[in-house]
Length: 296
Image 1: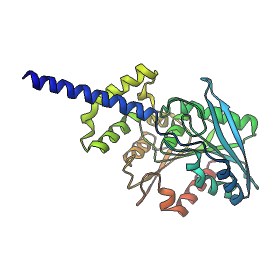
Image 2: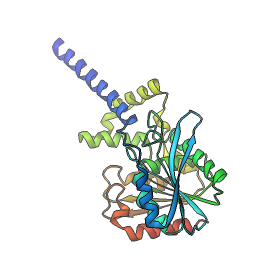
Image 3: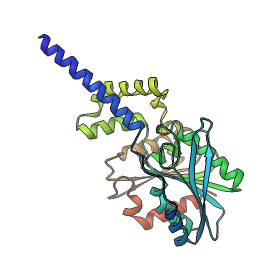
Image 4: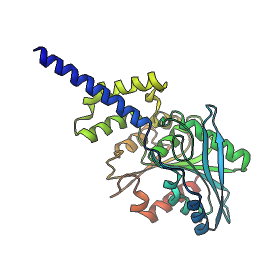
């Protein structure tokens, strides 16, 4: 009996330590190298635009970097485009290309903890949402921005939505494949890895969140696009792939239900995670452009 008890305790300790490692890995995703300027040159050549680097420093001392693209014939509107977790601004070049072609000025930042930007950890919107405000200030104070819009994918979409809690200068935004809350996607992710019903992981999720609070001072329950979207008056177009198994469609459905009058949901048939542009490029581009142009 003692042997069984010891084995049970050992298993619990092992699982608990494993969860701490999982939490640390989530806060420190594999980091890609800083994007090479030749990628910006390529986009500029193909869209008859120019580009220059941008930089801001946050109140906690993190330096953030971006590329600022200006089309040959600007339409007076600027779009901030935010990439997903573990990616860089390179992941939004396809979006920048069609926006520049239509006359939009585009800012492509690397989120904190990604690419060229500083930041030791990724906080899933807790700090990144505030970073958006620094970029908005930069655009309005140094670039004379008149109309501002935003588009993001996955983590970038979740960050963009969370920024709406304090940033009111967006005319409209597009959120492609966002999560509703970090807590909910945490359950989904563990369920995807183990094939065990997500609610089984409640003690482990709680342990991981307590660890993040104690070690990093982060309350990951605050990473909640759902809370932000309920209160915002900024129009939001939600886009989600019907076959998304990374962040299930349910997340965008919940976000739409949280503010049905201020949001629209477009479900892209056959699209997997952040693949709606590739799956239905003509409709994607026309829907995004129409959404921005209808909120001037």
